[in-house]
Image 1 (cartoon, helix red, strand yellow):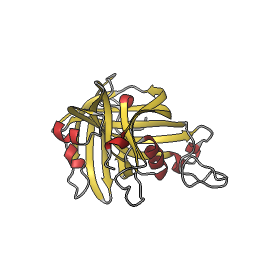
Image 2: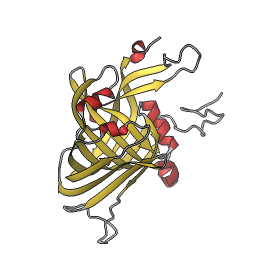
Image 3: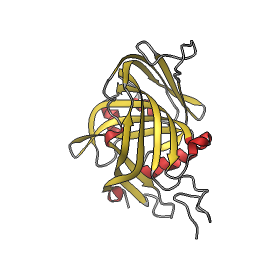
Length: 268
């Protein structure tokens, strides 16, 4: 019998890209809160979500991961990855939620876990300034005046770059954030005559547990989103940048909630 939570499924099941949940994460994020054109933001929302005010956030994250039975961080190439996540504000049945139209990651293992959750992951290169507990010109301080940068590129083209200058600790998280994230799980059909009716098309709400948060630092920020010949990310270009943030967090994922089967909204 073949085993494995994801493909490839093999006799022992150790070759699959993502093992069975729970999945444990720790990360440090540099985030920028901004406003985009509300009409353009609304155009990205799937059926079941209501437009909001155009408020968005970009998260540049360095992650470390472990499975329930493994210590993948002892083999860092299996555990570490970098990711850029764009979230937009929306509503679901009158309640505020976040929706992710774009997310870029540099590890196929993370990409597979994300697709299972409905994150629309694709390959990309994220770089984020690191901080070290030493007084050196080579590191910013996690303190008032500390300056951090982040960049995103995909397929040899730079897509976005950001800077954050820290001012004060103890701030609330940026909005939108992951607390009420809603995703779309989508897997298409290849059989002739069924291309317009996917095998899976679901609106889901993410669930995390054992969430822990460091001090949240807030300050000024810049964010530039660059033109691209095919990616529609520039449609979310900031019309105003509100604030920047830096914080670390940890969480565990092993569940989600099905909100709506969207296959009835697809053409036959």
